[in-house]
Length: 305
Image 1 (cartoon, rainbow, N blue to C red):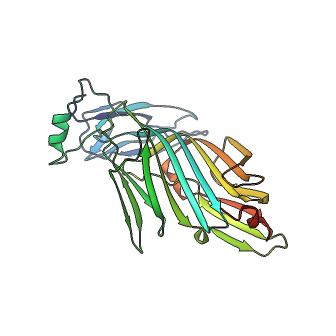
Image 2: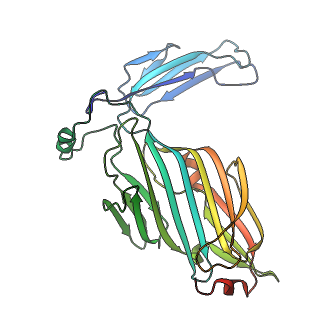
Image 3: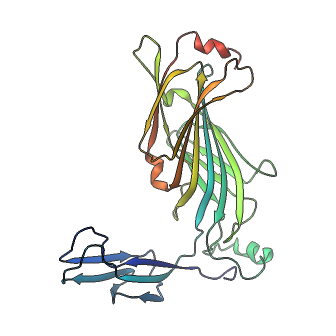
């Protein structure tokens, strides 16, 4: 498409509900985010605004039956996809701090430009802000009380960011160095600190039990959504942590335990590495709960942290 053109997507589906059993009667409703729908193929739907109704089908439908249909609708927004997200959470038991860092490899899966990028034309649009398929900015909501945020990429520090914090919210607004059009890529990292007391609790145990509860995924929260091809989460525990157990509702494809060594460490820090594939925004609300044993002398292993 051209730089200022509308973007259209095609959604292909079955008007029959996927079922392992015969279905006697059914009806399918499809609600789209716009009324600009130039094509609707298959199924003979009844249209009301942005809603398409297929059926009702009163004749019995056998198990596994499909009735292909597709619609083409306007969606002039970026299709944000992270091929890889590496997320680290480092527990500093001595300093009472939980340090977050996230490294993103982003791409826009929207329609590619059929002409060269015109920077003069792009600069002119900044005055009236029309809909665009390019990724202009990212909004990252953080937990209240977060501090010391940073935003860097392969070149260095990116100054086009804004951090707003109050008693009710904390929000990090990121603006890439350039607009990310369809097929373009942008890699960067962000990080911030948080008070460990918001995430760590002590439990009664002769071995000094602690429970850490952290979100599996935070990151950008956009109206058009963000999807992830692969997510690697590392929970870096205090040095000397033992009896490590964890649980999460996120489907994992790999779990690995390793040692992570940093400056002034002695034996290294136990680290959990959790890997998930094909992750979507809904995972934001799912926590990781880690229980560890930490005897009173353990924090002294890294007293100069």
